[in-house]
Length: 376
Image (cartoon, rainbow, N blue to C red; front, side, top):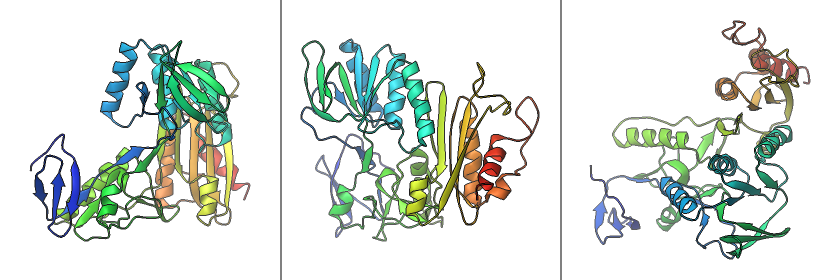
């Protein structure tokens, strides 16, 4: 195997089955794997190219940000966006002794989560000294007078030492489009369950291609690292002469914000409705160690769990959870339930390993499933 570093693919010659590299050489292929990943979404405003304005996509970006913060002795950082990266970076800036401010055009952080949970995230931001400016849109970035930069918004201007653009990503499909590969409705490369594209000898994996969502039963764009790893293995097996399919995903994801774990799997109500379902949902609050404790008790470990199900059948469609402990493990359990097609009746009586030091006889998963079942 030859590994060529610091070299860009300039063009793919389908007729000659070779790629033309930025160093002027060509490389022939029998099979071609598109792993071009994604590119950061930009607000397309004046000044976004200034020194001190960053996106965070890879290790190189992280090194550049850390170097800038150190060399410029930054005191304030402004984050545009309120998704995973924005929230995680607000914690990172805080831990580095830098005052973060999140600028967001919407009302609440992590918009995919239920507003009740998003409000809990907002509380965590405020409690840890993070400023959150809602319904605020960036207009331009310019050099500052009292600080390195100045951000202009529809609600006024603010001084800052650096700006992080955390507006999500989009699939990098320029090379794929240039050779006529079919692009899916999501804007990513269309693949089959073997990771093969519309050309038999070309495969695609990772953030540049679609994945099959087992709950929506649609191909969608879900740029997550674990999915990319699995798709890469499937493509490699098939190219190597094996037979392997990638069975899809149920859309599980998680992140951390200060002392909170935040996780979800499956569909939210809007996604479920657009997929043809008739969703119904319920939220329960409890303590992951002792669910009977009131959530207002000082020092209690709060856990909020939301289940979404199909109203006509009780089939589970999705779940969300926020709390200080054992959140991701419960969503992982519900991800398995989604994968297996369990309904609320089955989930409400799942057999868990029970002992008083670890939890109650009725887990929050049981309680949430039974609560939602009573609403059907």
